Each structure stands twice: as C-alpha cells, then as structure tokens.
Length: 92
Image (cartoon, rainbow, N blue to C red; front, side):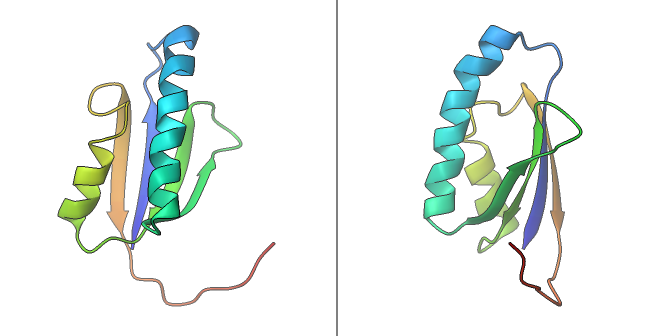
C-alpha cells in the first residue's frame, strides 16, 4: 500500500485552483471507484493539501495514475511512501 501526500503549489491562483480542483476530484473519484484509492481526504490544518491511501500492483502503476492528475507534474508536490499494513481498526 502507498501513502500519498499531495500539496498544491502556493503560486496557483484561487481561480486556477478552482478550475483544476474540479478535474482533480473527478480523477480521484475514478480511482476510488476502481478500488485503487481506498482513503482520500484533505488535511484539516492545511489548505490545498491532502492524503490518499492507495493499493496498486506496483509503484510504477501508481506513478502512471498520479501522472493523470491535473496538478501533475509541476502544479503540486507528490510524496509517495510505501508501507505494509499490519493492523487495521474500525472507525466511523
């Protein structure tokens, strides 16, 4: 599994961000529906930043998916960390 931190660059105007975010939301919904993205959400303490937990066959597949994001490659920072889940609790 992978933890992806996405932070949109500060130099993007509010108008540009709004136009891109609509396409960004469609992009992550597509992969959420496909079961690749299993958890998506914005950070509560930072605007224009959020996290995705993803499960993909490989890092290469994940990087190909990330390259479809409207913010990619130069309009946001993408930090990808692979991890091995050992325990999963329930929440809601």
